[in-house]
Image 1 (tube, rainbow, N blue to C red):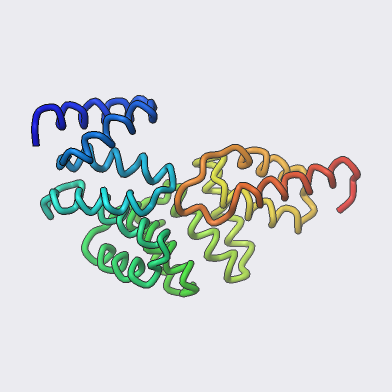
Image 2: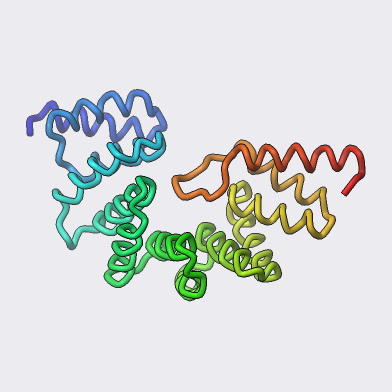
Length: 236
């Protein structure tokens, strides 16, 4: 791997850090196709591809990063978590859940708790998901995604009281978190508190979505327009 490849990788990495995604992709894509191996630059490219929802290419990039990363490296858990996310988004749910369990048993971090708890929840293993998500909350109660996981798990279990508690905590930490805003709005609609529901959906409708967001922008927009109409006509 030559100087130019590393230079392009570094420049793309810096452009990504500055939010210049077009310039970052140009440099990182070129560097990748010409043999880029440095895990830091590869993970930057992988993150860009994840944002573009190009999960097949993203998986390829993260697998190369994994190959070039020592097991003891601080990059390793995050790279493995990203690989699992790609596998899940590519429809490899069982494989992703198995890998997430292995990762959970080997490392502990907010990201790993969030990912494993999320995949358990999506697999319908709600009691297992609740256990892992509560562990995650003990590990880091200020992580919005872990609070969101707990809210969703309780919501799916029909426990709106606890769901509301953790959704409220999630949106306090990150005000426009799409899932928490949407499901919390549903709870407030059921409680006839349309103004609070409207404000939550208004916050969420233009928010960034992650690869693991469980609701769509269309769902949020539709619910927002419904609540807006109800507020105007004073009909519940």
